[in-house]
Image 1 (cartoon, rainbow, N blue to C red):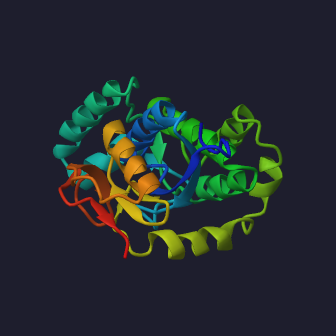
Image 2 (tube, one colour):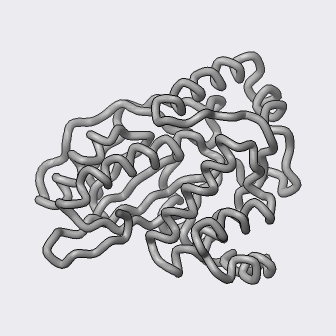
Length: 247
């Protein structure tokens, strides 16, 4: 369980950079959750979610998601949708390209606020936001949807926090600078401040990295996986050199 503590086990801290409109980030989270469940008796875990903006200029009012991808990617958008549907089914979900897309800023403000209440609260909120946006055609910039997700995880004070557009704004910018300024794609994971993983890694890849981090062992072998990058003309970017040690 993310954020659980037992003094008899080593702590694995996981800093995650992601965007709530990135489908690979949600796939990565589902795989991470599987790894956390498998390894919960071996380690304590603390997850922290940090913002990333795939489209910093996305409109706040929202635009039709399917039309946006069609205008951006042309005929390839249908193949991309088919591929994402297949990937989502592999983790037990039905991918939907219905609804609106747009600015994810308010969702990141809310995620920051949830993090002030605890890592498990934050982790659960990310789950609800992604479920709504990727499988239920909910708009990530819709205030009522954000508050509904907050209520589901029993996050109190969310309405008051979001009411002031300045709340959490500086903190989001600070976290962008600290965790996301040197990366070009998400999801991105920093484990125990030393081991980096990028892309929607498999549960097995996470488990091997947990072991390396806990024992200060050499890094596992590089893994090939998928992520979403800023400025890339595709939702699917394959990168073979995604695991490295921070020096």
